[in-house]
Length: 139
Image (cartoon, rainbow, N blue to C red; front, side, top):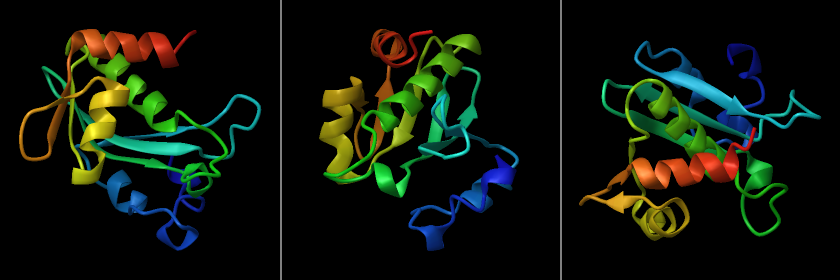
């Protein structure tokens, strides 16, 4: 991912400091690309794998995948499904948690099956996690 930093900089309309994320030892950063064009990053996710769940620190669509005229839909769903799959693989039973922006809480409940645990904490449990993996990661 470090070789991709030129693409995902704040001055190129990305919202988060991905260089900083890559330099944090407790986080793993992944990119999403498409098969026929693997050099273009469609989205990125920063997460930590804990013993009982995966915690997502940051998740971001590429600038051209935002808004009404986005190139691809489903980028956040794919990235969260990947986090769920990691949770299953690493013994977390699919559990994923993250802090949500207030305006996105309903989106995460309706689109991802997440539970709102108060304040901004969101949790995706096993059944919802499996549905996301099945929907987005058909391999």
